[in-house]
Amino acid sequence: MNDSHSDRAEISPPVLDQASLDQLSAAARSHVEELDTELHRLWGLGRNIILAWTPAGKGVRVLVIPHYILGEMAARTAIDSETEDSLQFVDEVIAGHTLADDEGFDTIAKYFGYEPRLIELSFVPGVDLSNDLMESVVRRYSISYIRNGAVALFDIVGFSLFSPLEQVTQLNSLAYSVNASFSKMLARNLDIQFARSTTGDGFYIWNRDRSVESNVNLYHLMHLVLADNAIARSKGKANTTPRLRAAFHIGPHYEFFQSEGLSPTVYSYIVGDVTIELARMIDQALPGQILVGDFHVDMREGDTGEITHIGTSEFIERTRQSLSNLEGIVLSGENVESIQCYLTGERLDSGDFGVKRYLLRDKHGLTRKVYNAKVNIYRSGGGPIYLGFQTGDLDGFVFEDEEYT
Image 1 (cartoon, helix red, strand yellow):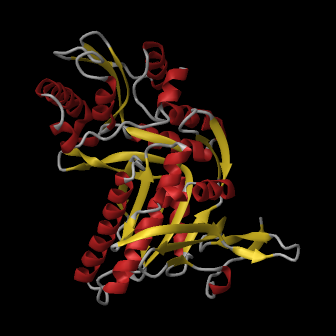
Image 2 (image 1 turned 90 degrees about the horizontal axis):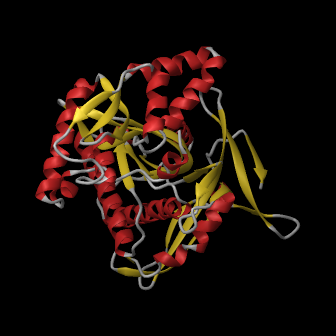
């Protein structure tokens, strides 16, 4: 794979939904529909995926492979360490954009042993229709691998105990809180490549832009969602507004588009290490608690493009430095004067404040380290909104060990 492909992989193109399609010119819409028709034919109702593509004059070359090939490679890796390099190569191929130059495309095709298909078009890719628009269409028929993606998980406490109508009401209330909070951030030009999928009793929310700034904005979005939910709970009737617990983590995952009827959806789904970790973290979280995973990952600086290695503590410090961006946001008719967010701990004998890191062991015997997070939001007229718990209020939080960081 060449360097240009890895650089472009840092930001995934937006999904081309109906609203975006309506904004295109008539000619561009026609080109998109033509390409989509050809890809749909090769997709074979979900039997195949489009692994890579490259422009070829008045057309494109695409590499089409059966979807189960990737699963078979993963299964072989689990029992044969010698195939680990193979899976790493696959992850590199699907990390981000599926667009490759001629040399990179030929390398991928040779590795998988599948003959490229030529799609003849009535327009010139990259000229009559931009590569980013082409990529947005192709991505619906592909799979993406994200090495270090930020994901937040909102879980409705006691969801299975409610009646079906109450469950629908609570999910709708949570969805509204997410949409309202995202709208408030957009109004402050705090943009993120926002995406979400349901877990059944909550939502995963993730960010397609992997820069430090965008990941910080996702963490801020989590604050606003929890705050909007807390205000709604204080005003709503019993069982209409959910009580939440939340978790935030950064790690690898795959993003894909499921079939809906005879076509792929315009909404993506994620699965991978980060979602597994979040699900197991949330299982052990108290109602109302906010947990943050223990991560040490490479992130891209949005302004310089420089890659920075950042751990959980450094990341939370970045969020603290940018909290002024949220000042003035209106919550329930009141302007936000200030916000505090931090990882909890206790004052040490030395006088310093020690942040606690907890070791959790799940029902499978697997362990992970997490932090307990706290958010305080102060408004000009209304009372403060306290989210999460202090260290002294964690009665019932089961952990195997703790340490100061």
